[in-house]
Image 1 (cartoon, helix red, strand yellow):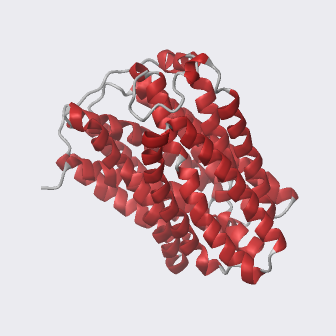
Image 2 (cartoon, helix red, strand yellow):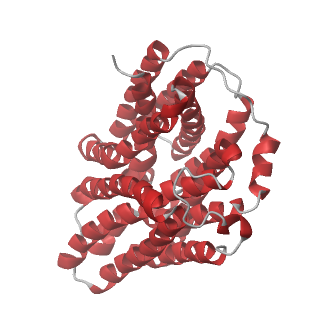
Image 3 (cartoon, one colour):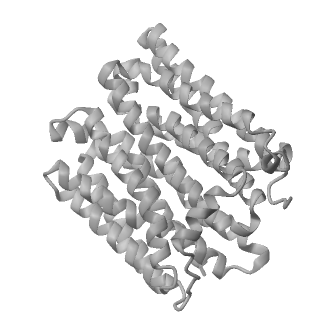
Length: 398
């Protein structure tokens, strides 16, 4: 019998695939809409802002509703919004569809993790969450590249249609396989917001925000960077996303292991420093190397980028849980909001860079943001709340 957690993971795979495939199909969408790629980046900005601010509000309002209804309902809404995106002829309608996708995706992700905890015995809760979150990792490694490849065969509308169909399958599976009458406790929005002022939390959230800003100022416009910046053919984009995704899957695993062995703060420091260097080298390669060398170099650097960049997320989660164990659900949701705010800010910054410069300049901008994240990690080392956590292994309670 297939575990109910697998069906929850199918949902996170679906929403993760849509969230990451946009980088591969953005140029095609912009071309059809008759706008620049930078203007098309508002699709990423709108999604990320809606996810960051909408998910906590919806989770607060619907915290006591039957979780199976929320999970199935959000999947149905996600399917409908993807179908609308596939059928629309208006960029504004597509933008609104992505807002609805973000709201449903954010609520689904928060509810799926809470449901996994409710379904698992105490000694298996961490593994249950890892199964659900693993859907996102698979989406990064396989879903986004397959979605981009599908777009090259059927057009970008075909990708949205396929995601809509898979969302419907996930909704049916949830209705059939997830037990009813699982209800949570509603955490007031004020309590969620007040968690931010707890000692040591804000620097960790700022690190996530800046690291994501740097990474996604480049990733959002990976397709024009590859084609215009390094001379790779457009047909290579799905492979480039696959390279990044495989690296990300490895990085997520390595980051968790490194946080256990060497400490979460050390892992976070290595991640943001390494990411800064890699992003800077990407621009350096695009500027100085011939297309015959710049393209292959970008592919190699993209794998390294995925590994080093995704080492940060498990380290940050470990730091948050160790900082305030009792407030972990709220602080982790705030970290997710910081992550998506960083994605939104990165898409805006990257679009501005393309407007005034070239895609080859994106790496410099990304490196600056990630260096600022490094400064925060190093500068806050001596704060009492964070000094207690220095190099604590994952899961430790100070």
